[in-house]
Length: 295
Ligand SMILES: C[S@@+](CC[C@H](N)C(=O)[O-])C[C@H]1O[C@@H](n2cnc3c(N)ncnc32)[C@H](O)[C@@H]1O
Picture 1: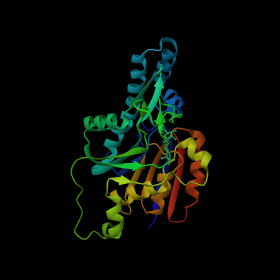
Picture 2 (picture 1 turned 135 degrees about the horizontal axis):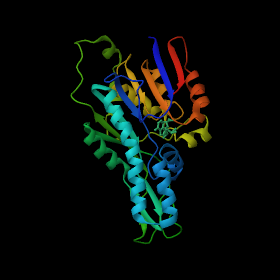
Picture 3 (picture 1 turned 180 degrees about the vertical axis):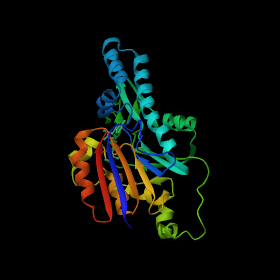
Picture 4 (picture 1 turned 180 degrees about the horizontal axis):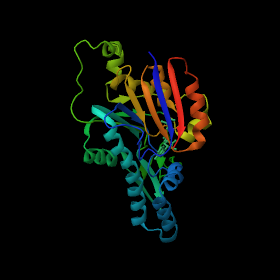
């Protein structure tokens, strides 16, 4: 089946290229608020975040930390609202997000990104569905926020629980989707019993990303292809369209191609252009038409 793949180098807080109600599935992993590696990106996309970080340097105030957290989520919220607009009735949104732990102004605390996004998406109008916990085997235990027990790991009470799970939040727009009886492409898209039993259970123990370029993987915080593969096959039918508004290295596009879905991806960091081109070219064939353009 011939499929079409659009990659737009631009900010997904506005997606004028996509018509209302024209996308069946969104699969994405945004930059995680309050994880230090994404501070600069948030500040580049939104001057208000940059100003708040400057203010924090000057006033070291906990209220300023709260304002930074709120402002980062306000930025993501615009993308969730645009996603709601472009999804078809019954379309699904899958958001891979991790909570953040961080010491700012000498205070260590958890920033529960998953609960903030759930509340925001409910306000937008999404129905919240049961989520998936992605258990990652990689993180070390945490002591005083320093990522290790530092020799006091057996003494109560100051060690923290290790954050070794991420969330895959699932939302639906409106009611269940309807299909004609015996819809051929839907039947062709069926998963096996083994896949169903594993994929529809709540804890996934998929190993971290196994891409061939570890440096790139760190820079884009790419998710494993297996995560994208499961979500695309669980929640869309061959020939439908998958959106990723935070495309990074292009994992979602690549896996959409492999599964005979169309795709649209947005990426604001132009430096990722060559990475995306390279990764999507791996599977590019006569069957997959790729168009990449800048806003
Ligand atoms: C966590 S990474 C996504 C990784 C991706 N799932 C992969 O496998 O490579 C988030 C990406 O979103 C991009 N981004 C952040 N804000 C954006 C925005 N407003 N519009 C488009 N892209 C954005 C960042 O540049 C980054 O590449």
